[in-house]
Image 1: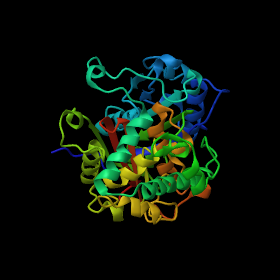
Image 2: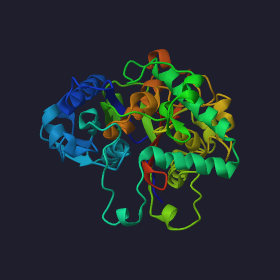
Image 3: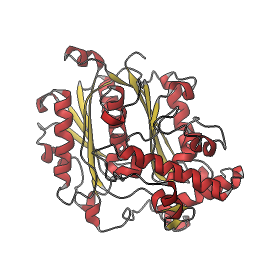
Length: 400
């Protein structure tokens, strides 16, 4: 049986650039911004790094292919740099590779870094990417807002939710995230909004309005990992360790028959179930202190609460409206503002989510700091509801 990685790898340091329309910065500048913070936080020199994993999605836009862009931008000491890409879950994939390398003993200290420079593409949303040789022959043409609007329609039909009630619930998700993001100096969007603004905003894809969709931005984030005993030898205390890392990838089941009803994300349920088992979590509603989920659209966050088992089937609407996932709720979600306020520089988002969990667990989140969080869950989704990659990471204090 797999042994898992619970408490085998600790976070030595992390860094995150300011996200936004960074016309002032190249991809290299963004990498340096996140890297310098991470290295200072870790208290190490470049010569102590054994290996690196580099996440970027739109490599042809200007970041470049392979591991060379990261090696050159950071002047790394000729260590191995491996570029990874797994749609929007690429950042979490880089973390998973670095963690596994350290846990195996193949290296002592590794770094995972993600970056994306999307504003320079000129697109209002994500540039269109080819998803495979045969898929375009049978997959209907669609854009991200339409795909996730269909998730909303299927959810409403399955659970008999009134359209106005669902719209108010997803608006509450957006209002909550903006309230959190307003307190975060690294977020792209830092203004609070009202329910009325959400409800009356222009429609993008029914029922998703302007404020129900995350934006496109530029940004980078980095994490340095090592084994706990090495971290302690370096004088580190209050270690944040990985409890679980799980990845589930669609195999065509969702689009190949009529079993899937379109109201949830199948891979998220599989990955979260495996992650809870790996972390030894029996009751996630009691044992998960906070979450960072892939809120590309507000409906995604709402549905994800059920996929993660944090709400009953059909119960997320009620839980959202009752404030269960607000900053002062039972299980705060997107305490840093989420994709909704950071935007989604694809290669960096998964590591940015981890950054907030790390700060919270170390009591370093400033105005956003929660009271005594113990365990954080990161949900990083790539693709669309019917065809995707889902990564679930769980981190917490060592030994807890």
